[in-house]
Length: 149
Image (cartoon, rainbow, N blue to C red):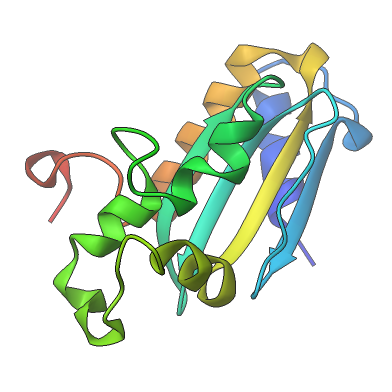
């Protein structure tokens, strides 16, 4: 079975970059999901709901807040998953609020983290995020006018 990890390793190697299998780990945090510890890794994280990718982002080794709290609190940053969900009429039936959306995300979305050895660097991190954006076209990435119809 060809996995997303195999796909990423293959694409990175096609670009001529040496990468060991163990330098990239894919961890399905499940649904409901538990948060992650970076432990010196860089990460690309994905959130999906009912088979649709909602948000894909990245964070460095010192960005634990971006990974573990920003997307669960609409007031934490300019762009985050909870703010997008609260502004989306598709989620109105859940009667979510600023105080409930974070727990709803933890209990109802599937989260997959792609942990990358820090030594592989920012270009690999950027590539993995961009590749997943292209592959899954998450609902809350890019501006509406930029998205392919």
